[in-house]
Image 1 (cartoon, rainbow, N blue to C red):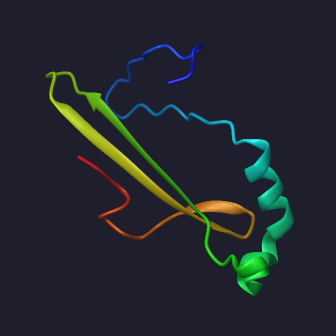
Image 2: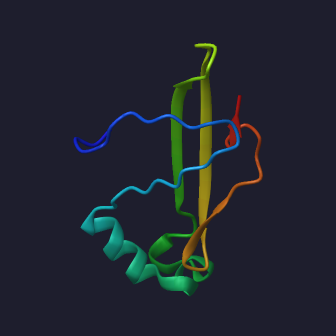
Amino acid sequence: MEDDEKPFSLQPGQELMRSINIDEKLTNILRLVGPDGLRLGYQNTNRIYFVGNARYADDLGIERNVSVCRHYQNSRFVPVDDPDREYSD
């Protein structure tokens, strides 16, 4: 968690979009690869993924997990269709 991030609560059904900063090296890689670079295998790169996991406690105090796995396609990250990688419990 970043220093300026504070714990927060969400009500059932409520959503809160969060973002993370990416470093300059990854930004430059994404610019180099561009929208067609992955399809063409530019510099032997044909896949880029973002993987994240968060643990939280629900209203009953039960610890739960949420996991995301996003595949970089056409200049954006899209959800992976794999329940072992993209889930919440």
